[in-house]
Amino acid sequence: MHAIKAQEQPICFLKAISAGISAFDGSPPSPNAVKALTDCGLDISGHRSRSLSQKIVDQSIAIFCMTNVHRRVILQEFNVDADNVHLLRDFMPIKDKDIPDPFGQSLEAYKVCRDNIVEAIPSVINFLKNKFLQPK
Image 1 (tube, rainbow, N blue to C red):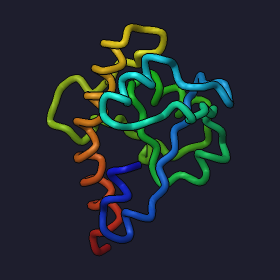
Image 2 (cartoon, rainbow, N blue to C red; image 1 turned 60 degrees about the vertical axis):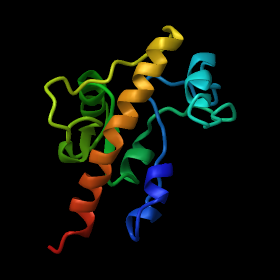
Image 3 (tube, rainbow, N blue to C red; image 1 turned 45 degrees about the horizontal axis):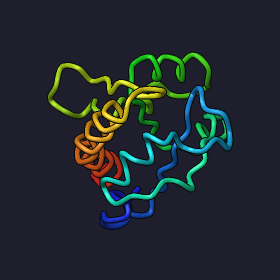
């Protein structure tokens, strides 16, 4: 969200939300997620999970997933255009596009996940700029 707000118009007006395919609505973040992001100066202790719904899918211009499994589940469970569902690392010149989900794992696993997501953000921002700012 911070990276989007730092962009020029109209990208800065996009809203990024987090929703999980296995999340329970209203659950707090795991202690390791809180610790991993506190190291970066972000406080997510007040964040509450939400489950991905058709309403969220319908309101989305793009959906970004961590793993191919997440992507397949979304494509199977929701009425969504496959061209709008991407892996966070789809736009990076790397072979392994998955970012392993650290749920229930060690603090180190959460830090690796955090770092992988941070690394992917510039390519996601470039994708959004190319998709929405280029003349048609």
